[in-house]
Length: 358
Image (cartoon, rainbow, N blue to C red; front, side, top):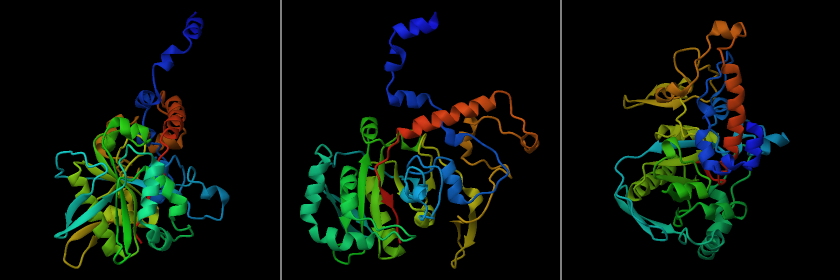
């Protein structure tokens, strides 16, 4: 009887929910603890926990295999989502379509605007092309060499997407050391329209680094990140998000960026792949060790922050795993979580943006 009544209602129950309200009902599978005895490397772990920018599932830098050249399969193509909280933000103001001037290392730096976000992406792209012909042709591909067997980022391949997710930019036209492209995500509606995350650390106002390339070395890369941080404060943001390639993640981690899940926005604990390094001045820094093979379940640490652990199902003991046992109800729950994750992650079609520093 219930089935007939549901059919007559023409699925009105589900029609009352859009994909975003349904997404809120889905569990964040990146917080589910599938305990194993296998050791794994850092980026394999982050990919498996939903830390890729896209709905990718593996990390491989062997691009000779055809499937490894697909961004929706291999996280190494478009990188890993990272986030850093920023304190001292100013009161939010409307700067869309306006130049922003920030103070960096005691000097003013002007961030040029693209046309207002209300304008079509094609108009914004044309506006940039009209003003920066030489940069597009001669400098853009040079400062965006990616290495590791990947083709350089070029405006011809990338400009259309970049114009969609850029409101301000900085070009080092004097010395041609690099460039920076930034986008503000302030309202829930705008995040949803641009298919950007809006949960967890992304619930508030944040700055997204659509593209940063620094061919002038790590020193200039740090300078560009200071510019982004200053712009973040001026625009009243709570933090900065970016997608990093594996060869730059250590640099961003050293600046305070953390790996986060692309569904739910939860920080991923990668402490099993870190080490403390004493600096010449006696201070101690934490450094990523991506090639270390580690099992985060060998000690009391989980693979996420403690504040997220309350949402996890009970972990199996090693004896239960060896015996092939499963806590009551968890086997079916895991199968449902896997199906839910595939549905949820398919909705996050991130704009193809990269952030890396050579």
